[in-house]
Length: 69
Image 1 (cartoon, rainbow, N blue to C red):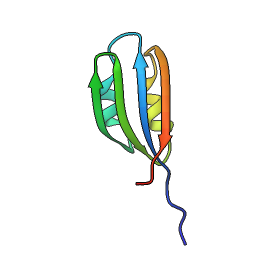
Image 2 (cartoon, rainbow, N blue to C red; image 1 turned 180 degrees about the horizontal axis):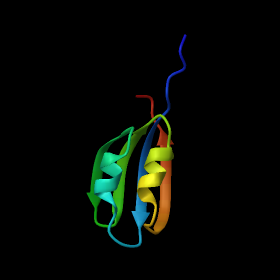
Image 3 (cartoon, rainbow, N blue to C red; image 1 turned 135 degrees about the vertical axis):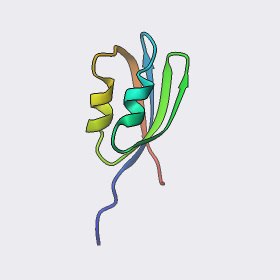
């Protein structure tokens, strides 16, 4: 039986405006929402494309919770 990829619900707070467009284009990312300096999304599988989308933007906090989706 194939192993299921992890699904994470992520909330990131930035110093400035979140890089919403870069995050939306990252492979495995969906449901991007922005509220001021806070970005929320769901990451399916590898975190690497999501992390690369954050490059160059100062992060204050990052929370990730594995979901049962």
